[in-house]
Image (cartoon, rainbow, N blue to C red; front, side, top):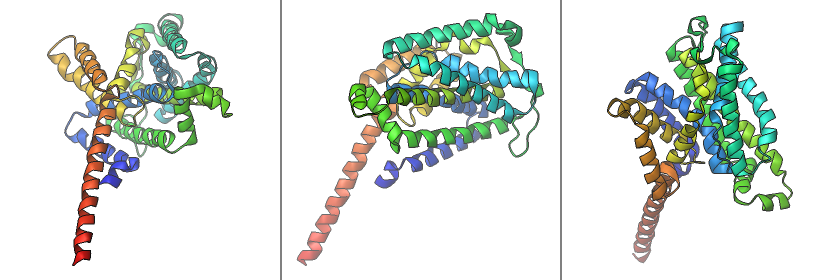
Length: 334
């Protein structure tokens, strides 16, 4: 039991198996939104919890991936796999360029600069490129998506399977980065003591740049999946008013934890779909829940539960060890 709990690969296998089976209990559209939102949030959670960068510009990186996919399907081709690749590559290129400038700023200015980037992106997609983006009316391309072999991305079932497999890949990647790589350890050092890391000879700029690129390219992947799922993209996807969502979800689930984005996304989508039917201002519940969770421990739901379960399992393991010792002593005395 203790070994299973401490094995993150086992956790990923169990949790994603449960997540897949839940589509037979809950609406598939609900589960698909949870998966896409959790991928979207993972990059933000990694930056906050492991690098110390709070970003209110995530809708911009989401929109880049979404519009890259949408432009291809609306203007150039009909293959959804190529469209997703275009969205990811466009996000990668933009992230390489913007990251080289943004990460030179300290945490406060980084946050404000990303917020400004989100506002600028919103203006570009809504006004400056309205001839190509159609502004708030958006691009409709669902009918242009061709059926594909093996996983048919022209159907919701195929998009779900592809997004699910993509999420598994993302979680395996971040499990390695967070728990099994020198890069992940240096990212945490950047957050805790950047000067000491620089003194030890590490290139802090490259570490932060690579973290920025990885995290926000994953965000662009979420944008590509979002675009493919709805078959529609409008400028509203990058609205500055939505910039708080990935940050709030990250903090709610547990910033920097492996499964925090999943838990936070599940709660967020659940409240949006269920609580919104009862009260108009369902965001109020999210805010109150976030305040309670932060006051309880500042580690989010997953961070708090992991600490509690670790103590519980360690206590159980110690009791078993004590019992085994007593039995050995009794046998020896006989």
